[in-house]
Image (cartoon, rainbow, N blue to C red; front, side, top):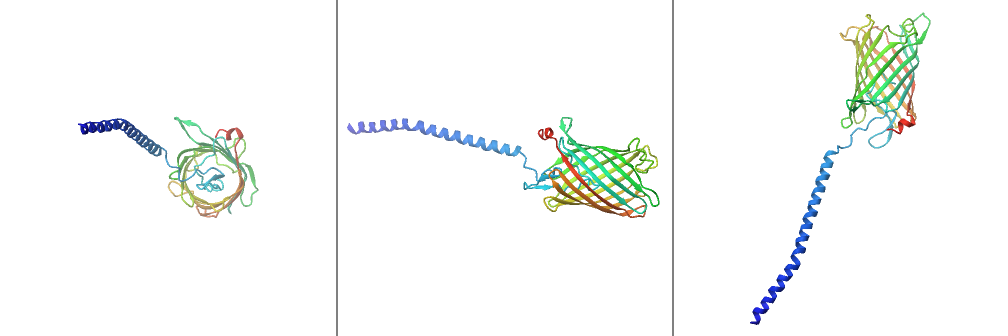
Length: 327
């Protein structure tokens, strides 16, 4: 009878041991399951966050003047732009920033020599909201102290044609390096300056409508312009179109070279045809001061004469302290 009694004792001990060990094991298993669920949820949240956050753009935005490239190095903006070229880029000044270009430019030809002794090109950056979306915009006003001289005639000097415009930078894709702007402008003779009588401006006004496209490549920046110029209140002048293509590249951190090809003609390709090539150079003097120069020539002209273009100037980028604090 002792054996059964001993067997019952062992069974009782095993039962008691099970009662003591099973709950902790179950609790540990539950805790392990909860930890695994938390890890899965965290991984899922991380994956969703990664999917929602787009990768950084391949092409950093070219700020006017000096900007930081993809390596974080401060370099001069080598985007083809006006000035020193005629071909312009879609970029606009930052909000509250002024861009002032002061240029001296000459067009030498045997028939007529024209000069911009002091050409003022003033630009200001604003960011209006249109349909709830911010639209980087450049406000532009320019005018020259100009001169013209025909063979055997005295030099005529005065205020040349002025121009007002708004550049709307409506498309920016830093991943593809593509930027697009629309740049409507109106050109007119300043009232009271007698620019038309002096031969320094055309009669009436001219509506200018350029579409500006920029594409970034690994070693250079490419810009294309398509422009329509429609004279207003001047039945003598024809509507013309211009195609311009420019490219630019930094050769040092503070120096950039640029070039362009431009062709202008009436839409029937029969009149006012002019094909030019032009090169430009831009050099940083200070963070907000840049020197630029250009040299170009005509390749083909309906006039049958050669044009030589030469220009030099200085660019100022000015940001008031209150505007800088709002960026």
